[in-house]
Amino acid sequence: MKATVVVRPKRGILDPQGEAVERALGHLGFAVRGARVGKVVDLEVPGDDEAAAREQVERMCAQLLANPLIESYEIELHG
Image 1 (cartoon, one colour):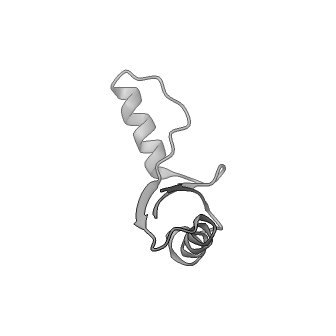
Image 2 (tube, rainbow, N blue to C red):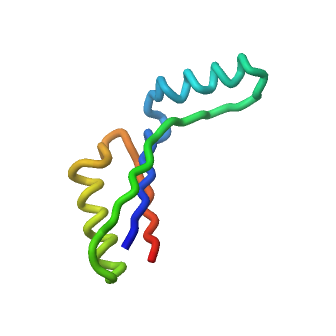
Image 3 (cartoon, rainbow, N blue to C red):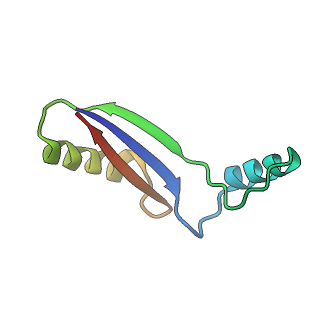
């Protein structure tokens, strides 16, 4: 089963990369607000049990992929 994890800084947490992107887009003439920069992690999890795969990816996020103090994450399972 394939999983996609999107990790972003939580609201209210300083995001210097997001601020830099927002400023750069402004200089290019794009009016944007609230740019946040995160990361996408694509995984292949063995098995066909969606509940077991989600539980395993949740543990991966808690232990390595995201810092729960300052980041939030979303998990999407495919197939």
